Image (cartoon, rainbow, N blue to C red):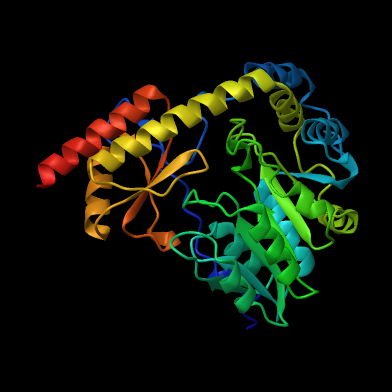
Length: 361
C-alpha cells in the first residue's frame, strides 16, 4: 500500500497557537495577548465595510489599485512596487515560496516572529535561528550566520515579542553585508508606532536586495479582516505577484484598509494613547520589580525572576480576567508580553501584578 506523505518540512511545523481570548468561569475579561488596538478600527473603516456588504456577491479587485494608491500616497511610495496580501503573513509566505526551497536556508533571530520558521519549513527550506544580543537584533551574528545557502534573512524592526529595534545604519550594514544571492526582509508590523520611522524605505530604494512587509492588523485595528502589504524592488514584487491569488484580499478588507490609512486623525489619536500608556505601564511595572526593555511597539515585554514566577503571574492575571501572552515559545520563558491597552486595562494590569507580587512574598 502506498503511504501518502506531505512534503518535507511540513510535519516539522508546530500548530500555531494564537493569543487566548477567553478564561473559563471569568467574566469582564480584557484580552491583552495579541497586540490588538484597544480602540478598535477607524469609524470610517467600519462604515466602509458596512457599505461593502451589499456587494458581497461581486469578486474584489484583482489588482488592489485603490489600496495600493492610498498606501503610496500616505508613505510616498510607487504603488507599482506595492503588493497586498491577506495579512503580512501571506507576503512572508510568498517570499519563502518564491526564493527558498530544499537545500536553502532562511535566517531569523532567536526571538523573532514564529511565521518566519513556519513559512521556511512550508517551502521546504531550512530555518536557521541566530542569537540576539540582550533581546536586540545582532547584525554581526546574522552576517556570521550567512552561508552560500542563505536565501532570506528576516528581521522584525521593531521586533515582536521584545519591542526592541535597531537603527537605519545597522539595517543598511546588514543589507550591504549579505551574500549577493540573499534578500533582507524587514518586517514592519509595528513600524507605525515609531515616530518619523520610514520602516526602511530609503534603504529599499537604494538597493536591490531589501523588501519590507507591513500590516493593518496592529495600529489600524483590522486584525480580524486580514490585510497586509509589502514593498520592494519592482522585479521582486513582480515575482511575488505571480504567486498571489487574483482575489487573495477580500473586497471588504480592501475598502476597510483604504479608509483606515486615510483616516490620519484617528491614527494620530491611537498613536498618542499608545505612547502615553506604554510609558506609564513600563514605569509602573518597573516600580513593582518587573523590568522591560524600552518598547518601540504597542506592547511591553515584562521580565520576571524566572519561569515559575512568570507562569504564576500569568495564572493570577487570568484569574482576574486579564489575558496576556506567555512567550516561552519565543525562547523567553521568564517573560510575559502585555499589550498596551486603554487606561482601564493598564491600571488593572498594574494593580493585579502588584497583588500577585505582594501575595508571593
